[in-house]
Length: 123
Image 1 (cartoon, rainbow, N blue to C red):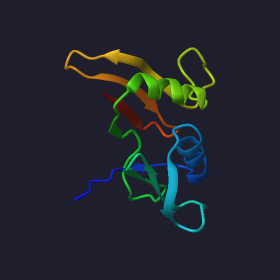
Image 2: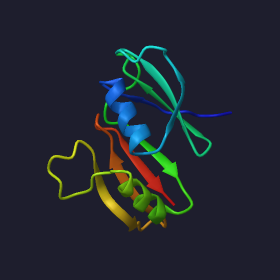
Image 3: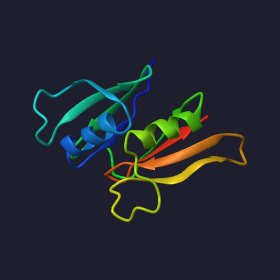
Image 4: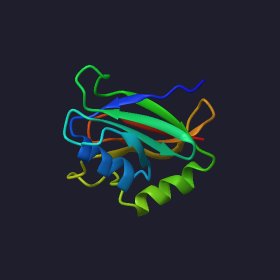
């Protein structure tokens, strides 16, 4: 069984630019046309994520946890790919927190996508 989250987006082209260009996902399937409404299947490190700009597919502001073996290295790699971090008021997306140790035993950082969905990268 696979459980695949669907994140709602307003503009498929803008979301794909963020997810593939910054977060290093690959678009592996979806609608042939990217004009909205549209649907895309993304993959990264064996995991999948659905993006949809269809009105009935989810709500804006969802949260998805993504596990990784080295959250600090991933954070550095995403910053090198252009992830905008706090201190840039023009950032369409931003890191809520840099990698931090949580009281519940994980090390995490949070990224907000262009549509207000949060990706929680956790180790």
